[in-house]
Every structure is written in structure tokens, then in C-alpha cells.
Image (tube, rainbow, N blue to C red; front, top):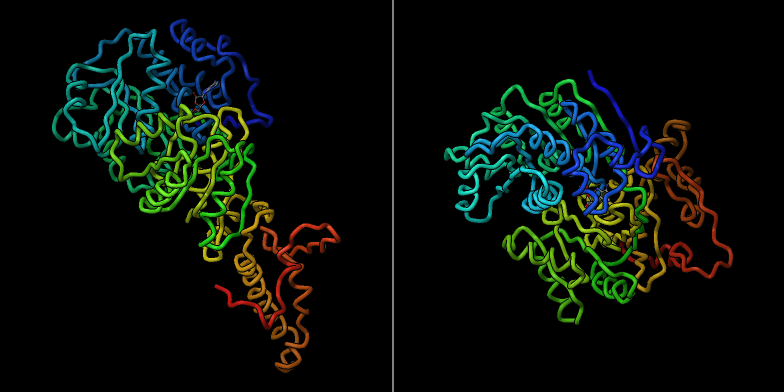
Length: 478
Ligand code: AMP
């Protein structure tokens, strides 16, 4: 049996949002919630806490920023606390698996804050640091282990941890595990779990591999969907700026010259790119830092704390390092490089507009990145509005867009001229083409339909269409 509860943030949900005090949560956790000033459960919390407290399995389709951590942490803390179980040496009762060290630390902080008046003890396990303190904590005995899959398996192999007494299992950000190549490790862990257990499976998107894994892991589960798969956070105001690669740095400077951009997360594709960019911003007197998988765990934690406290205004990050960054009030996300996958775009922009706030994302797109942008737009099901109101607007990049359109138009016409009038000569076919001035006013909609865009009359706004040089003198497209 699968019971489906569906909710959209800010939209009409299946639940009437109650107060936490209306939910059957024990006073020890209620007082922690009051101290955190959480009054109203988020949709995933309202949907997940009651069935989890009843012992049901849960499939949650929700991104970071929806309050998903507390949604599973509260019931597990409560059930372990009420059971009065001792923390057994090397044999945890609960296991939470997450793809990155940062996410593990954040989940651990949530458990610490929410469980501060309970008797539940937990520890973290992740790679990139010495294993000795982790082994010591497990040997002393903890109720819950929050872990990345690789290091956990290492410790299990060495006999420092056993899953034989496990009762609660959470797999967080399953789709990211898949992206990062952790699925074989996850599957090994799943094979070690006792049959009798309660499981929670969380993923921002639900590709077929993830659905398959969920079905093997869950039993008679409840489903809570917070954002439909691959939809971007509703409250994020998105825009794209076409710019030549060589001008991206100058455009970023211009964006940062606006003091209302108070806490800016900038995404780049590579570690090297992150290092280069944050160092050059520091050289220009901008308070910036970089975070990526090549930096030590300590450096990453320090940078995140400084960004969270407002000591650093601009954080340059790669996708993997930024996964799970739990920082409210990120005013802007800038995609300095267009992500190669639509999924990464959704995750990136989800770093802003968290916990009910609004936010903006700006994507800097050069001509060679247009194909990735198109793929993203297809996946999220919308055209990202173009912002041309900056001095670096690239006609070249926009030409790429029109060029792609022209290519498709040409082949469509070729096909249709072949089909409808096979006797037509080449010259006749080409003479029937629409003049360039008309095609430039047309743009494709996301559904692939051709949409006519009215020419702007005396708007005074810069328009790359209007500015396009005559066909013969046009620069070669990239
Ligand atoms: P998460 O999706 O678990 O990463 O949570 C996103 C952010 O929302 C975190 O900063 C939480 O502290 C915060 N948060 C979670 N639940 C609530 C709530 N019910 N009320 C206010 N803030 C919350």
C-alpha cells in the first residue's frame, strides 16, 4: 500500500498547517522547537512526522531548504527517547546516510539542537579526517550514526560498527548519491540492514533508478512530495545574462557592486576555477572565500561558519561542496558557469529562497554554454527570463540561440519543401524562405512551438535583435 500525500510550498497543500504544539511531539522536543523558534511545521514536516511517529516508512520528495531534516529527526529522536534504550557499543539503533561531509555535519547539528533535552546520543562518521575519534565514539556507544557511505563501510569492515541492531534507517539526498557514484556503497549498506526496521527515503528528484531503489527499501510507505520532481523553487526569481566568457569576471564585479547583494553564493564548475575566482575577488578587496572538495574538512567548516555569520560576503563553490549548504538568507545565487546538468541547476538555485525567504538566481551564459541552458529550460519546463540590462550583453551568445533556431528552421523548411513539392527546384525553395528580419523576431517556446515576439516600439530598451548587424558582416558564430 502506498499512501500519497502531496503538497507544494506556498501553494495549496493537502494539509492544514498546524502548530508543532498540535502534533503528538513529546515536551522534551517541543521545548527544543520553541528554543529554535520553529512554530509552524513546514509541509514536509506536517506530512511526515505523524506517519513516522506511527512507525510507517516514508518516501519524501523534497529539496534541501524545505525542513526535511527535522521531518525525520523529530520522530526518530522521539521514538528512541521513549524506548529508553541504552546506547549500545558499536551497534547503533538509527543510521542516517548522506552524500557529503557538510550534509552529515548539518544533520548532526539538527539532531543536537532538536534532541538537546532527550537522552539520545549520536555521532558523525565521514571520510577525509582521521577515523580514531569516530571509532572512539562508536565504541563508547551512540543511538544514532550520521554517516557518508564510504567511511561507514570502512568502519563496518574493520569491525568498529555493526548494523545488526538497527531499527531506523534514513537515506538522505538519494539522487545525489546516484550522481556522485555512491550507489554501490549504498546498496552494500542496505544489504546489511535488518529486515525489521523503519525506513525513510529522501530525494529531490525521482529518476527511475531512484524509484527502483526506493521500492526495494521501503515497505507499505507513505509518500510526501513537496516540489514536483525537477521543478525549481517557486520563490526564486531567476534570470539569465548572456555574456562572453572573457567578460564574466567584469559582470560579476558589476553585480557585486550592488550593496543589496548581501550574501552571494557563486557556483563554478571546477576546483581550480573556484580557487582562481575567490583569490582574484580578494585581490580586488571583496570579502570572498572558496569551498570545494579539494580543501580540508576544517577549512570547509571554517569558511561555511564565516559565510553563515556574515564575515564573508561572497562564497565561491563547486556543486559537490555546496550540496546541503544550510545557510538562510543567501540573497543571490550566481551561476558563474552554467551547470552541465539540469538537476545541478535546481539544487544550486535552491540554496536561496530558503525557510520561507525569497531569493534571486542569476545565470551567466556564454555562447558555448547555450546548449546546457536549453537543456535546463527543457527540464524545468520554463524559459528563464533574459536580463539584457547590463553593459556586457553578448550578441554572440544570443546569436547562438537564434542560430540554433535558424538551423532548425532551415532543416524544417527543407523537409517540408521536399515533402510538399518534390518538383520544386533548389532556387525556388530558397526564394521561399522568410527574410532574416522576420525570423529574428521569432523565438522558440520551451515546448518547441514557434512563438512570435512583437518588435519593441520605442521602448528605449536595448534589444539584441534590433542591434544585430546585417547578415553579411555578422561575426562567425561559436
Ligand atoms: P532543511 O531542509 O532540513 O535543510 O532545513 C532548512 C532550514 O529551515 C534550516 O535552516 C532549518 O533550521 C529551518 N527550519 C526547518 N524547519 C523549520 C520550521 N518548522 N520553522 C522554521 N524554520 C525551519
